[in-house]
Image 1: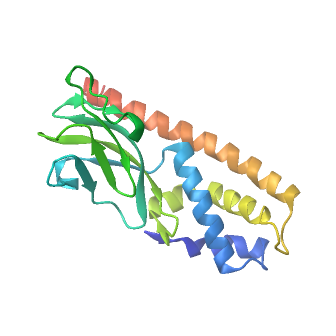
Image 2: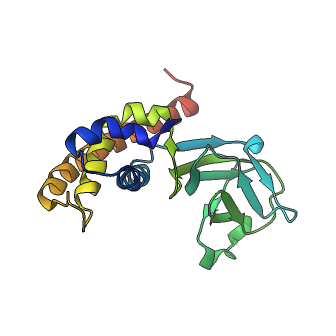
Length: 201
């Protein structure tokens, strides 16, 4: 894991008046948005990665430091696909098909008791008070994240560095970086799916 404060080395030369707290706030906002938009922070799980409550309705996951579950990308219960729902329709249980939804920060609530193995993939995001992110994300997407952090800093009203024009410039570069990263993640997942289904070339 890498501390979010490591972004200071790139931000400070461009915005020397920005405080550490402002940079960290902008970094958290940027990385959370980046993860939601690109699905770059994924976690595959098996039965070794969660515990069930006494009613076998809530699975709580062991997550990396400073992270929470944003949404399950897919879940299987004994090999059968689980329907991803919301709290308002948690009682929907059609033709024996299991359903679930996220209970922040690290749990999934199921419609009926879990009686077999759960497997799947979760999309994670940093928590609102995160101090660090995965080193792999920091290194792979460093330039894109810096653009997002600068954009969010320049959008901070009431600061001496507030500058909508510079914010727009950096947000444009950040948006381009998000598109590239999202395509990269989608391509990687498609490749993994094909090799799993067909055993590779």
